[in-house]
Image (cartoon, rainbow, N blue to C red):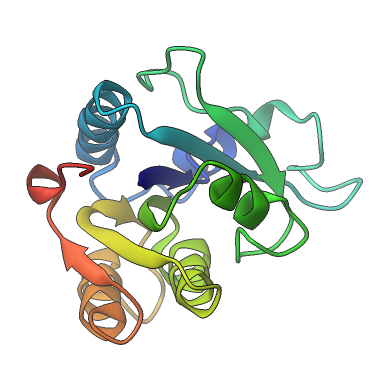
Length: 173
């Protein structure tokens, strides 16, 4: 059984001062994945990153709300996390196991933080993991373009930590 895990597609990151590379394309790709997962009766999880009290992304902040335009149908499991690794201090692993999930399809933001950390942790927890090659993004940094960061992580994570495939290749079976 597969599950789709979408990380940090929230207002404060998507519409913040550091715009994600190809953000609108990512949103369309995620919606395609969501609809396919829903049609396959796969669970769809959304992680929202929250920060400490007083931060712009503290619990309850509008900046932690999911981005508008996502293909939600009300069956999604939405949870909060406070670390880049979506498994730390959350019930994600237990929720996946209780649903019989063996393979996690990972997408969302930000590539070098939460996407990377979650892919690595999923393997350590015994889950097969698929990273959607064209289903994650980040912003340019002073040292590297977002495109370089994404390509580097797709290459680095492939094999040792997960399978990497394009969204169109993922069939949730």
